[in-house]
Image: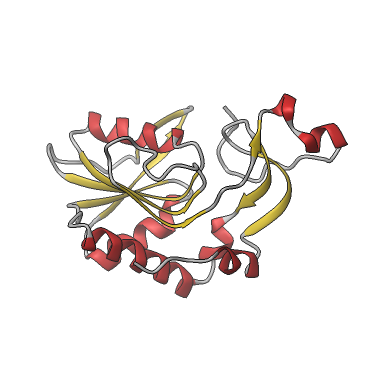
Length: 193
């Protein structure tokens, strides 16, 4: 499987340096804004095709591809297109992850979840729980970027990422950027938990 390079993200402004508050509540000096990478449809198509190829090579072609809103929408749709599979998505409503209204799963349908960035895996685990409650059988997770520091962050569920990065994160009370007085930015779309 071909992968992507950090320089691909830096070149288009998707890899940012500074002082960031992640949705996990952790602080970091690096932020991956995959929306900037995916803003060019050709790059989105390439990322989707690469993830789809990784799934095919692992015999993990699902009945349905699921992309969590917001980050998984574009790349998830591209994976579904490359695999010629239906695409549905989840969204957060009143603080809870749910299937987007009007979408459903049949009992036992196989599902692959596609994310943009996986940092702690918390959001993805919420999606896994929702899909399982709706009868879905999760056979794999994929993302553009893995910043968990683990090769298999979802236990026994197969996971494929196009880029693994090892950016340091800190608890707020241990953050050297806070100690320096550097202003913090909260660039993500999800509320801090």
